[in-house]
Each structure stands twice: as structure tokens, then as C-alpha cells.
Image 1 (cartoon, helix red, strand yellow):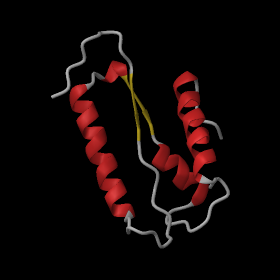
Image 2: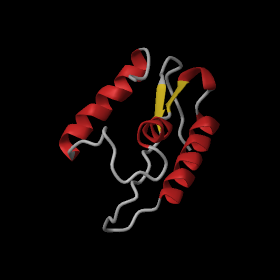
Image 3: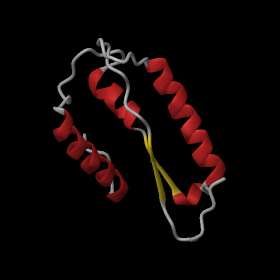
Image 4: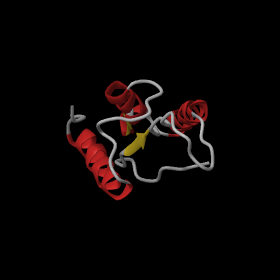
Length: 100
């Protein structure tokens, strides 16, 4: 069980991005991503008071940009660049809004 010790602590939860419709090794399935996002958010909501929890629905944002079951997408980046982009994305959401 997680115990939050500071009453002023803000918690940010970010959903996992969808799995592209591409061959990957080891295999990954989007149904697993959906189930894990659901479980993770439920666990966070059980532990963190709503007033201290911010959720960034990255999964939904990617689906809106790329479509459900996409194979390529204009927002896809090489892995290193993608790490920096998503970090900036999450920080922007915390500060004041998801970039369009």
C-alpha cells in the first residue's frame, strides 16, 4: 500500500500510448495497453485523493492524432527524440494544457 506523507504532494498519472499496428518483437497487443491503463488509473484513484491527482490521457491524445490501430503517424519520432517530446508534452499538460 502506498502512503502519501505530504498533504501538498501533487501526483501525475499518464496513460500509456497505444500499440501501433506493426510487427514488433516481442509481440505487444493494444488490448493489453487498454487493460493496464484501466488498472493503473483505478489503483491511483484508490490511493490518491482526487484533489491531488492529475491524469494526462496520452493514449486518447495519440489516438486522436493517429487514429485507432494506426501503422504510421505524423507524430512518430525516433526513440530518443520521442522521449524528450513526451516529457515536454507531460510537463505542458501539468502547467496548463495539452499541445494541439
